[in-house]
Length: 362
Image (cartoon, rainbow, N blue to C red; front, side, top):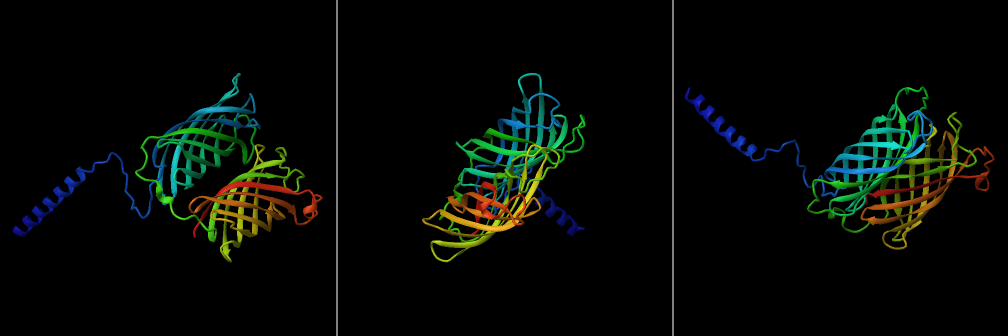
């Protein structure tokens, strides 16, 4: 029995010591601390609130029964950011707005949105978003991209664009598949958890544009001669909003010359419910005239809207923030089969123009 009493006494003392330590760290909610090797200080961390405003276009009357097709919307946002790796932030937020034509028509957009962001410097974030919620007369989904910049320790500004589609039938019977509305939203945000102690995680030498890379981009796909766009019955548009991703590899011949390969995958849509996909494989040759700048020419082939296509053009990357570069690119697109009057670069070509952020893993 004496041994049992001894064991019980040891267990009691140990439990009290653990309980006392836990009492000193009585957080109101579960907030695990990840190792410094996994995360890095970020200006985008914790709770934030803000005001949002911008134009929203819903032209097919599946979300709004009457009133103007394009109108401003105003509202608010509350969300939470969590750094999960150096330069990578995940988060969620609630957006609620009222879209009004200031006459006799208004509708509410209320969305729960998930975000995945990548650092564009110590005070910048480029992110993709997806969400579901209520849009006027219907349940809807959103998908898009955006960027934020902290202008002070606690205040940031945002610009984002998203396509919106309905989920299930709408009460008025005007059912449009895929994306049939679009918003371009600006915001002013307040970080409520205060600035981090340091955000200088992206310091060091800039990329030399060699090795593997990946990125996201946003822009427009113009097809004024309808070489690729199909009539789905919802109304042809000469241009569509474009967003997607890319990945590739550059080989450094010397300090100045680079050559490599790249794949691009994009989704294009308009507010008529027309949606398409483009996939391109490109070869690239370029020069680094001075540290931080890469100018290149690109050419290749792929599929645009299910039709074989060639692509030719070029662009430039500027390493503003360490391993992260800002890119602008313009490509001419033509039909490989010579259809729709297309005969090489001398015929009526289409175009894909994008801007984006590229992360180099060198």
